[in-house]
Image 1 (cartoon, rainbow, N blue to C red):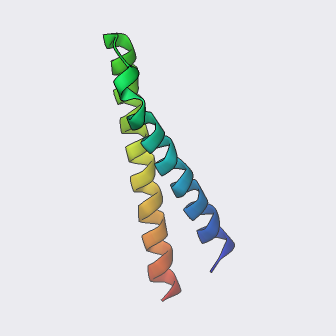
Image 2: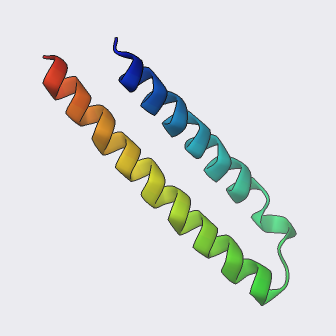
Length: 64
């Protein structure tokens, strides 16, 4: 497995963990401004995870 793929997998796992942590803490968010910030962060992390997943798929195709 290439070093690039390992680095991307590591970034993807870290982003997924951040997303899971963020979602687990939503119950503590009461103020609307904090909730809005949470949803912006969530969308950003979802986009990052999606982009990293696309990169991983492209590497898999290139390696085959």
